[in-house]
Image 1 (cartoon, rainbow, N blue to C red):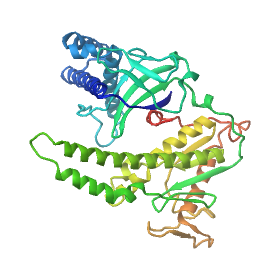
Image 2: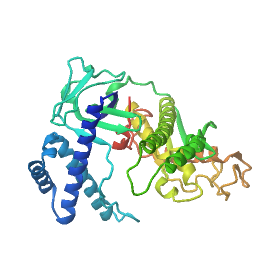
Image 3: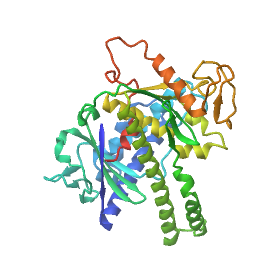
Image 4: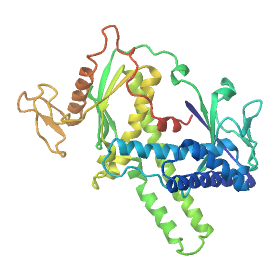
Length: 400
């Protein structure tokens, strides 16, 4: 799937209709989830049948397109299946028991309920919610694709307005020209002092977008909190302050996303094999001293984009175990104990001196190369498909 996103500027009555459609989708999801909770053991068929009964019982549910109601049921199914999978795999900690949604921000249609104009610059939603015609603002031309290739259409509400997303059934590898293999391999070590250091001795500074905007975020948060009135309806001033606070957070997240996307693309285009640490970021952020810095670095997002661009351009991306990559000497292989504050690797066995992160990157590359020994001799760098597929969460964030 490929996701194209367009900005829309709906009129006030259209905004009310979009919000009503989003609330209706949330209502269906929560009602179906409650039905599953009260009737353990019910399956997919019973949930969709219950959705049909909801459409007969509630007029506002029947006004929403039937496929949009079905996508709400599918969201419940994904949450339930993920919960059962976590239980079967005995994942430590919470298993992700499905929760009710309090503030949904999107409604999703399938192949009906919408219609594109002849020039593909406008979209009309044809259900009874009354959203009507919206102009698509964006540079991508949908005329390159057949209508049958568009499998999903979403309306998303964000802090800076409303967007329409199109999920196009398309292999990312079909959208690019083949790249001449560079015959290079690199290992990368992500960190906090530097965003990453590679095995070639290059380092990428950490932009720290959240840290740089933290002062303004705290000021906007205080302004929002001062206007909050407990137990009463909130004023327009409160909602205005809340929107300004959300806009700043949205800007920081977009800056981080674009930065890691640019770095990942550069690494993939300039190397045929990229080895990186398979870090347990979810566990690492539990460290109260480093959680903010780790989240600000965006390691998980960077990993997803590496896997995506590796698949798209036919390059190899390998996740290796981070065990002892910082402690072992990349020159002689001996273990050299060092604390986190020690930033220079000095080997007492072979007198090898190198930056701590660069030494770790070389070890990561060596581990990555060793893991490819089992490949056939006829396969060369740049000709083997990456082992890691792109995760669905990365595709939904691909805003072009």
